[in-house]
Amino acid sequence: MNLNILYEDANLLVVDKVAGIDIEGIQKLLPEGFSPAHRLDKDTSGALLIAKDPKTLEFLQNQFQERTIEKKYVCLVEGGVKEGGKIEALLGRSRQDRRKQKVFLPGEPGAEGRSFGASLAHQKWAGKREASTEYRVLKRYQGYSFLEASPKTGRKHQIRVHMSYLGHPIAGDKLYGFKDQRMPEGLKRQFLHAASLIFTLPGGEQKTVESPLPEDLKSVLANLKTL
Image (cartoon, rainbow, N blue to C red; front, side, top):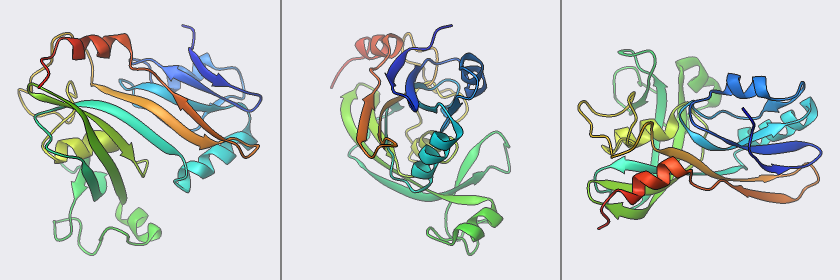
């Protein structure tokens, strides 16, 4: 399998990850010494930032930790989202299903004393971390909404959990979707795509790299009725 490179220089590259391969699989395709600077779920496609050496990896990971990298995703969700907004909530592992993350709100069992904005050390101890996602509606379809989502934090499954919490799970998401959730015609995976990254190069220049919507997701949209 060949990697589709969206951008490359002496220090790093951005590849267009296809759905169906996890980060460990990507790592096996990379030359020795290259390392992904962040993660995308196995069935999420799109822009993946990769460092060519340990110094660049640390440089990029610091940007993720400091939240200076701007990430934009597009997703198709169930139902009619009325307007854009921002979700802020603590995320932690679900007690009912250890594969899943869950939103915890103030006053909820397991969330006592852990408000949004609590100290990082306290959140780590509690096993729950703040998570913030901004979203806006790009287009509306019959039964679905096409959104742009910008996670301001990088928690596991963040967009998927937040959309499900809003009552609009991502189409095709078998883990966070509702029971008996419909599947749009032609969709074989969760409809979530990492559309762009804006980050700083080691030389100080700001770089924007975009990943076009893949053909399998384009065809799904083409089969939907617009509103």
